[in-house]
Amino acid sequence: MAEVGSSARRSEDDRDEVPEYEVKEQNSKVLHVEAVGRLWRARLSARDFSLQENEEPESDLAAVAQDLGCTLDTAAELKQVCSTDSLKCYEDDSNADPDTIPEDTRLVTLGVRRKILEGREETLTIHRTCRQETFTYELESHALGKKPQNQSDLVEEGELVLTVNIFYPVIFQKHKEHKPYQTLLVLGSQRLTELRDRITCVSDLQIGGEFSATPDLAPEHISKDLYKSAFFYLESTFYNDMRYPECRDLSRTIIEWSESHDRGYGKFQKAKMEDYIFNDLHIKIGFPYLYCHQGDCEHIVMVTDIRLIHRDDCLDRTLYPLLVKKHWLWTRKCYVCKMYIARWVTNDDSLASDDPSLFCDVCFKMLHYDTEGNKLGDFLAYPYVDPGIFI
Image (cartoon, rainbow, N blue to C red; front, side, top):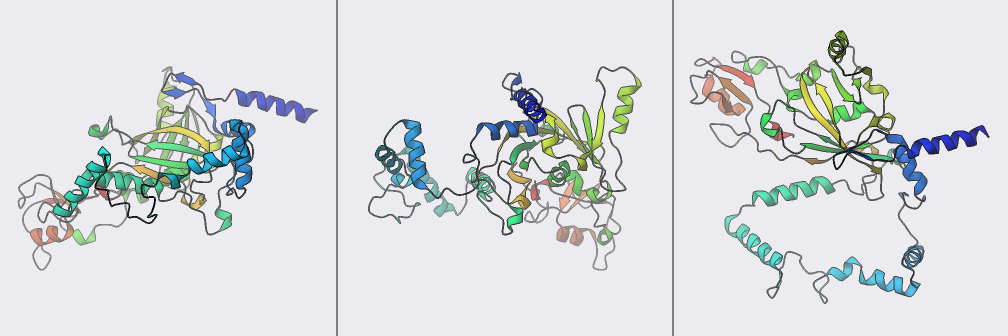
């Protein structure tokens, strides 16, 4: 009897977790992630979220016939008419080249495509928009339906998938109103630290110091190796990354500041990032939260979707958090050769016309040092990490 009462209370509590708008068309009210999954699994049949391929077409036809209120023969005819095979332009030649455009076509889109393809043959260039679309498509589809080689890495049925958007740090004013530069799919059973390790930011790759006198001795350690502290701020709770002995509680200063006077922010909580999975969280869909690392590099983080995993999704757990979108950025080329990506930036450079100036590794050393490695002229040199090579 106690179990029945407990189950009833849980069902009633879960109904309170149905996503509802707090601000219309912007963000939902606070909800428990795991409760959303329970609600979906309770409403759907096991067949709806099964990850196994359906090997019984007759049962499919029966289900379609039942949903549409028609006979099995009608359902079979609809399946044939609506099949993707019916979309082919060529009835006789099923292996026709999709890049071959019929001469008598009246479709405007095909006419535009013909002009683009002819232009590529004449100029040997690819339009930037086409390159971006191809890049975006490949990124979104490269892991679709991918299954693991090891069955132990297979995602479980009924697993939740969260869509997480990472925005540029607020120090980049030109991207202040821009779309997210990273969109990742995260499993509900993954820890917050797994998302933290998957987020890429140019400030994590910086190498501190001035190395004009000893360019070959620039350290290999990047900022992420030296300063490992970070936190997520979600619904009045700071989730600090405390996995390593050198990690510091970055939220302590903020909490002490808020508690020093009654500032109207309420009571802040803190927890260890590595102790929580996404299913444990209480969050709002579409609401901006905070990810802070490197002391003061702050990113807006927004969860825009929570759903059950589908058989057509990537089913390899080891690939999650899965990057599905990222912002296109041009790489900065060397000011001398105009070919290679910049590796050094100089200030107060007597040998360069611009301040700052960017150089690839070869041009930098050829211009600023003699054959014995002695410094020529006056300048300050810093290792440069180009955001376009990884973001």
